[in-house]
Image (cartoon, rainbow, N blue to C red; front, top):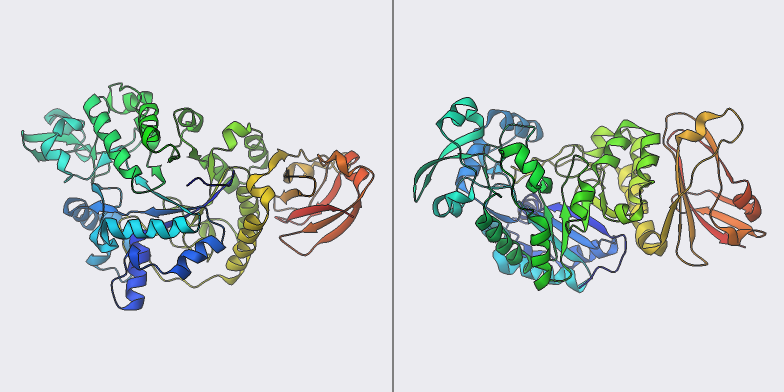
Length: 494
């Protein structure tokens, strides 16, 4: 089943937290097989093309023990859950012992039933792949210790936080914790050695098996496997993994989708190695900083790049957008993010204005009150995305705001672009991404409106205007916006 939208929408759900909450509400264990049709229908009604279930795979006692004993992590858990119990700490969903669905979630058959329900509504299922590391009690540690990066007594003495002693079928080994080159190791993981061709082949087999259970994978910290990054971290240079892996999976599953968590300006590199989508952390950071010029520069990139970006305002790693962005800026940032080209990536709790990020080690999250303004705003935005074909399949182009009059610099505060699908489907998005009143003119790229009267209707608000089409094309639409104000205009010739 192929996603029909050029620019699809994805909704991320923490499976363990979600099912745990439903189980407590119902007084019985709820698995993926028990998710009712009304819930699946609600995903379709909100226009989601993808559901990403976070943390469905088996985790083990070793990772859970580290999560429960790490004092820094525990302080974070208690800040989120003041009534924290040991049972709430189930271990990181990224300290995986096996790519099979946990019993608490219903096992493989429950996942298959959930996927089938999604498929009947035209929704695809995305799951995790954590390529860089495994849990310390993954079976490979005993049976294939050479799949891991080895250390020695000197390395362990020099950086004890980056290594551990592990029992294997070949005797005790010192193995490295998984990490990236900029931070200490993750103590509930062990680092896989991509300089070992046998490990690469085994990981491809794992990916092919996962591809039989879902329609796509989100690949955790995907850039860590790149030869130049691996060499910088571990001192050895592996053969490239991702071109081989993505091709091998698509030989058996041609429509399979890969999404990369990736940073350090390596998005284009991974796109060229087979990834359909890559995280767009750069846009998020610039929106957070309020750097309008940098936002516009980023959006000037070619669509061969932008179409493969996953655009978000929060996910399980980032702080909640409602806790970081003041409300007026939050709305403006959402319009820029989710009405740009690319994959629209939403997170569980975002629509309700949740402010507490749930660590991936927990299987219970806090109950927060719904922010009604936030819920109403996202309800409107999702409706516009679902019902407006131009935003899902249309042609996008950036509009360069021009000064409303000589010497008025506030035109530099705007982000603006146009969407068009056919003769009767034209839209203009304009956002004053600043805390000051701003003015500009926007020359609209719709020459067919020359000599016509045009009605502009804000589909995200209540504003309606009649304008001369020749003026819109030649002189530009005049905009005078309050701080953080935006319009999403539908243009119709009358």
